Length: 222
Image (cartoon, rainbow, N blue to C red; front, side, top):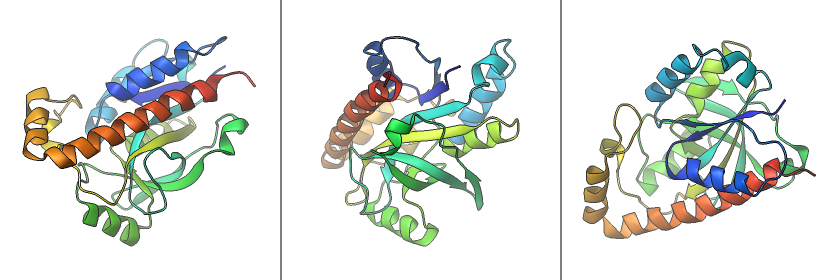
């Protein structure tokens, strides 16, 4: 039985689906999850009440998507496999239940899940140094915590789309409580910080391209 794939909704989900279109043979179940710890927790709780849940998670969970770098070591386009994930002084270990042919091309990292977008380059580097973590996302720990309590293994494979050298727009207020984006609010943030916005968009596009390629490689028969 194949792992069930969880991927943040929107562009990341689209990139994963495009990658899978080029894969022949068995296809994994792919589910689109919202952005943010609380929204992810609510989504997983609702999913767990469905009749197919136990069968879908039996082989384990693989979370894929984009992340931000908190250290000079990892650049835009780097593929990273999580060793563990930190959130509010708690740390949970990740599984490495991915195809062995992937493990030779990825970087194993320590991650941190944030309740907000980390937009300042100075803050990114500070957090990386003081917390001893390499990358940041907004969903990882919520997924790990939920499945840890029911004994299901979770692996996390992500692509860096934002490095620690430059600021990006603060889009925290453009994210609804349900994890969806507010298009008008997002557009206004980009208009107010055009250089940072352009950098974020370019990094995201590069990260999404690598995510698409990585998905194809991960599920192609070897």
